[in-house]
Length: 307
Image (cartoon, rainbow, N blue to C red; front, side, top):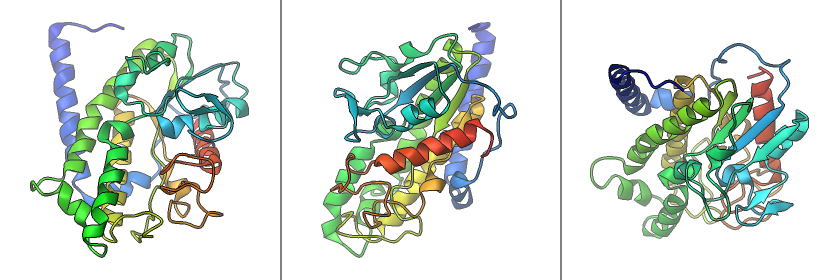
């Protein structure tokens, strides 16, 4: 990769600052938050006839599929029925490397995580497909869920979690999304440098809470008015991922839209995301096997130009 002259580097930094400002503006608008589930325009035309020979999957636990049978890597809680494995099988990929790992942040793209090496090490010059699903742990999905569940008893009909994260006058969860943007941008630029000819798909996060803003205490132990606040926070993260993908010539895969109506609050037979006490093999607040299969189909549809 050519890094160019110092002046070119300064121009690149200025572009990134302008992009972050545009994200901040976009995330502040309710209409644009709603747009986080709208289809994105395809980058570079259709690829439905292109064969994938070398596929690398990067990501966190939403990619790895903790507790979903069969677990093939105990350290990373990785399943052979997660969406990358299903995509690789469907496309008959000849060289497939899944290095997703539960608990991964963008830092683990460059740093080992236990026995899992730096995830970017798996990306080679001849890699022709890379999926990336990262950012949830950077903004603290786990701690947010724990905090909001702990605060719910203060006002079950109110929004104690929203009040907590806005006590300073600034929405700390919006700030967390904004701070995640340059980290994901850096990951995608690194992927492009290592695999300049690869198709890069940025995979968004599925619908965790009812899209209509309703709640389901105690199945999901949040206060009633915190459900729409947390729903909108996830939509903001997905919108940010969509924008970062576009900056880097990557395609965004919407997994939120296809999973609406199958969130943590639904009955066991209808939900594809397990609640904090799962009834199907999956980690709490994570996709079960059906959820992973639906995300796999979203990736396949994007690859084949259907969305």
